[in-house]
Length: 247
Image 1 (cartoon, helix red, strand yellow):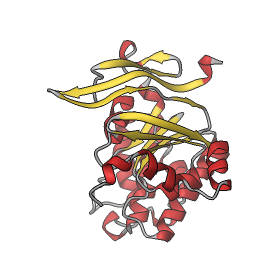
Image 2 (cartoon, rainbow, N blue to C red):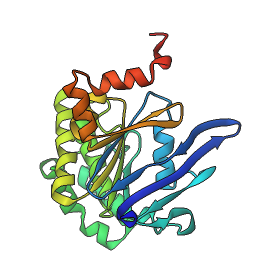
Image 3 (spheres, helix red, strand yellow):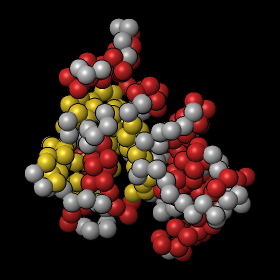
């Protein structure tokens, strides 16, 4: 049913001055999905996420969150969303718990009361009293995901959540996202250029190229590609090969 979509975009487009950044992006997500937005650097991934969050205003198109038109219900749609856009920034001289408490106060009493639950959710209780300056990159990413959960969102948008992590950190964040989806029925939109990570984590992926969503694959399609001896990486390169002629 149409109203089962937690987020839907129709003809989403954004232009800065005379430069078209994204054009005619149409995405539909159901509750409990992990959707990977894949693309080269500069393809339009972060712009798309910022439009979904209401950080930017579309030049054209519509965004529906929980069946509400975001542009017409300012704040009504985006209050259901948590986000980590680009690298998470924290007060390095404060503890992880204190950082979350400061952000939670902006949301209100309910968010403040959720701080301990959020620390547990992202498995950061043991590091909660350490200063963020003592955290590894992976720990900071976990705290950033925790911050995105302070308002108890239905939809969580993460921009390159495993960027800069070693293989152990990538595995840890990937498993955390899968667990939050399966155990807490959360929905994720994740942008990444790490195709193997997306293949292991996402229920569905969309390839964005030169600002356009050029292809989408569900689990079954990805499995068929694998069965033929291919990979998501091979498919991505084939679809975007004109960008790689210089390589």
